[in-house]
Image (cartoon, rainbow, N blue to C red; front, side, top):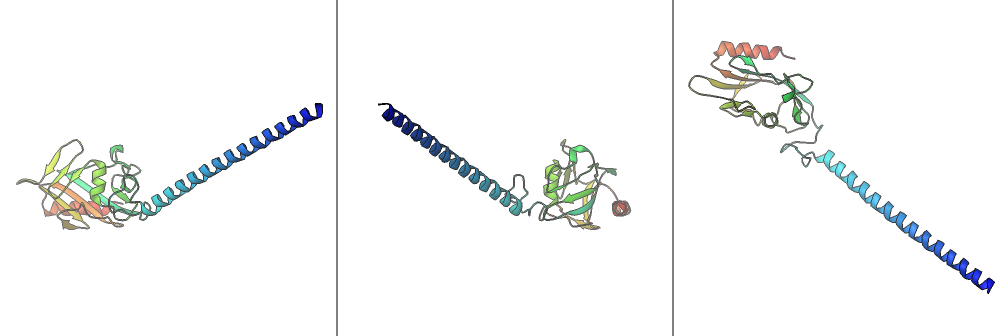
Length: 195
């Protein structure tokens, strides 16, 4: 009985060890499979984000891939002759696609193709159309019989600039008040001297 009992114990041990080994291998294979699936999903998501840009959260409609452009444009906004200051933190880097940065309130940075000025003003909370310039606090400056909103791109008067995609070294002037042609020319000269 001693040999038979010993053999049965050894067989049970071997059977138990083999079973544990199989379970451990099975669990390892499952863990490796799950890890591989996670890596594939993360890799694919990163690829889609980098190559499309359009599906990225917060991406402007019609924008190219983030990093597909790097353009700089100077802008001057004068309301009743006073310069609007975009250098405060309230207007710095509100979007990765187009923004002001580095406490510089005179230079717009565009980091993707197809991003419009309208999108930038929307991210800043500033309303702008062909008639009105609206501050984030709700104050509006609209064309009426005494004052007018004037928009210029590279010295050329424009009726609306919201759909404009800035190009390197553009000059944008937004002026509200009752300025005459000489005063507008002075603002354009000031704009040309920037950056």
